[in-house]
Image: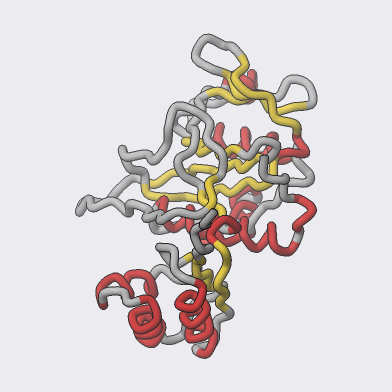
Length: 260
């Protein structure tokens, strides 16, 4: 029985000093169009879009590494993808677990605190287009994935949003501060959605000592300077989250659930 060859993705772990040179490497090694290569170089660090044969991916990773930042060719199935995902409106944790509640007040999912793998929250421009689905979806690995950046020419209002990545089974939730029901805050709830969101996440994170918090999440929860958790787009927050989730899984393999 013939099996398809394993495809690879290229992960760049730091910002290249010369993005033009990085774009040249991507163009030559991956046969990207000049415009596509320039866009990918501009978005680094992170995971290059697309899947490639091992030889091409390793050649591109080696070329990028020669420019300074460490880069690797990694089998596609080992690279996490956060979309599609669920965007719930109601979360609560009455006794020892995180609960996702539907519109009727029924519990859809129960998540043990040990199964919350990562919480990533940042300030992003708000857009009416959300890349989410009404149902939970596991963290997908592999496949071509291009994040829409939006094409509005007018300034967008900004606000916080957060990814919660879970395991056993793997699920991804994208929390929108304007869509959440803050009933669980009780008397602590205010008229401000942004204030409620921060308090909500502070209390949630306090229940998950084993969850990984990227540096920008720590800054947000500590009410640090805005520039420490401000992202130019939802896509930028997603790329940063994927990169740190990948780093976390590679450095702490025991935290990764076995694939069902």
